[in-house]
Length: 303
Ligand SMILES: Nc1ncnc2c1ncn2[C@@H]1O[C@H](COP(=O)(O)OP(=O)(O)O)[C@@H](O)[C@H]1O
Ligand SMILES: [Mg+2]
Image (cartoon, rainbow, N blue to C red; front, side, top):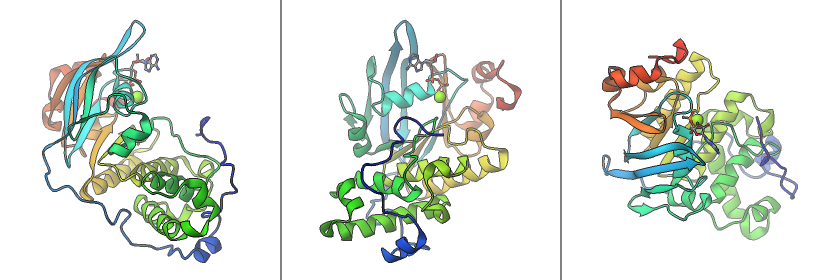
């Protein structure tokens, strides 16, 4: 699935066009090097890394998010669940600068995101995937990830694509790190494929690799398993566990309650834009308010 952002870059893309080119560029296709070798792994697990404070988003007369407050603790996988239309994506959009909150605030390591644009918030350390996949369809899988990596590097994308000599060292390291990320999410064999030609499940994984490329402190995933069969969902949950084990903090939106139970440390539940619960998966499973919120949903989605 692609959208309007999936336009080809003006330069002729040269990265990852085929295996020979990758080899010529000195890329080890089985690179085992960590994707972000100089990343500082947070040790203070448990302190608040994100504080969502009285966040409200209105669309005309509709209050999509209504005075929502919750924290994300460093090192945890926090689930954000609720029936369709509950405000989950709106919450992400307000946290990541897609929408300007009507009121309230979001703090990342104590710093407000108020007035910051999407790319600035990404740079602050909050990166995300989209419920509807947004990749550069005419770029290869590897190029999609390198674009994300570039957000942290001095080298500009056009420079990297044109292989200007002064960019070469950093470019090689970008390619290596891009390959490591593709390896990490399990799609390294498809590095040279155009992202639009990848199977749907691989596109979802590529989105995660691209979000990780910005070296986020908090990775926000909006229904990353949407459209997956149960086996694929379980594989994806395993990947999310691995991401957390690697030192990332994860905010996971998921509509399917059963799915989040096995992977999250804590769950925040939204209904009609309001927070109705914030507790451990076990408590959420037995919370009458949550059960009631999910009644009337298709049976598959009820725990
Ligand atoms: N850009 C928008 N303009 C108007 N209404 C919107 C917009 N985005 C979301 N909404 C509305 O806000 C409510 C919450 O939507 P959303 O956050 O997408 O829910 P969820 O992700 O939990 O399914 C819904 O009623 C939806 O129709
Ligand atoms: Mg949504």
